Amino acid sequence: MTIESLLGSLQKVKRTGPGKWMASCPCHEDRTPSLAIKDDNGTILLHCFSQGCAPADICAAIGHEISDLFPPSDNYDASQPKPRKQTGFEPDQVLFAVVMEIVAAQLIVDEVLKTMPDSELKTRLDLASKRIHGAWIYAKKYG
Ligand SMILES: [Zn+2]
Image 1 (cartoon, rainbow, N blue to C red):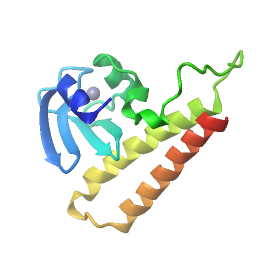
Image 2: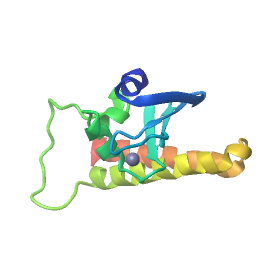
Image 3: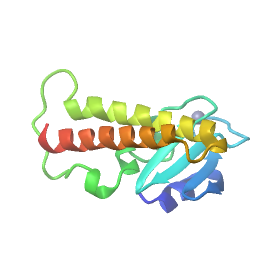
């Protein structure tokens, strides 16, 4: 999904900076927009500051899959289903949950560090995010 497509599905969208927006969270009544949206090189980051809504629930509320938040090159080829185990989670599913948590952490840190935009802490967190995202992509390809 493109960022434009996502923004078009949301209400009260307001640009707050380069690649950053706030909008009403589609999961609940949200008069003062509390959903932070960030376009991170094609990956769309979401965080609800009101109720901490799960990105998957936010996507579902506007008719999207959570995988739509990632660039097409990161997504599964649906024509090549992988054999599934009977029980438990696939490693890439576990890593995806971790990816979503660090996305939330990044958005929270973005808010906290608004007064210190060049913080080394933010740079390090971005590196951690890229590494975890890379691990998820690796797990999907080779897991
Ligand atoms: Zn919400």
